[in-house]
Image (tube, rainbow, N blue to C red; front, side, top):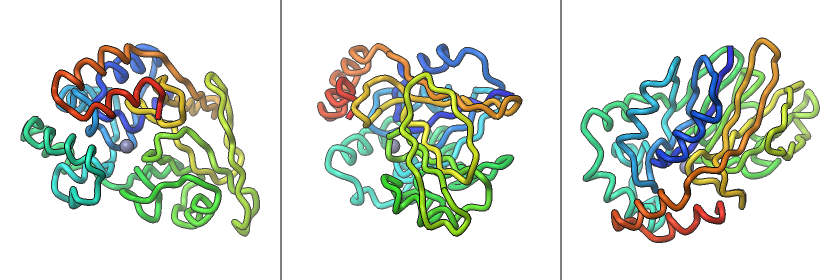
Length: 243
Ligand code: ZN
């Protein structure tokens, strides 16, 4: 079984379609939240995700904000502008679908959350310290997270959980997991690791092997849509630099 793992699509349908075509063959899809926010195609992205095989999708902070679970004042000015536009755009059916997403899922030997296992919607795991503090907050071998838009793996090195190791990934790299780990597949629609290519992972449970991939997509097309809709210019310009 090949599982396609996506996160932080952020209403970027062009990036999503490019990733789906690049991944080519997969049996099921797990999505780690933030299907919407920032980008120009929120309804289209939700409808595309809903129809993917074996889809399991959790709720991100942008998803939670648009359905009123989170006060939008917690977001910066530009994110709030994007959320205000979204509020007028999102269909009732898609809003309800977002509202029904769980914050946490346990599938096979993996826990899925958007931010962190101890604070599923909000916490950013950006360093070894926050990764270590979160190792005790999930029971499975692996915890999949998104939210930072930075692909990364934190391995717990010892049983007592006192040390962690960061695994820096190279696009196209295959890897396997030997110890309790927190894995972030990076962002499909708004990468923030200074690499503008869309990011995703595939896990094959027959070989126990993971694949980390980046793929170029038509960034200009998405930027033109963002500008034409009057959304914040920065949400367009940052796609060029992947930040
Ligand atoms: Zn996000």
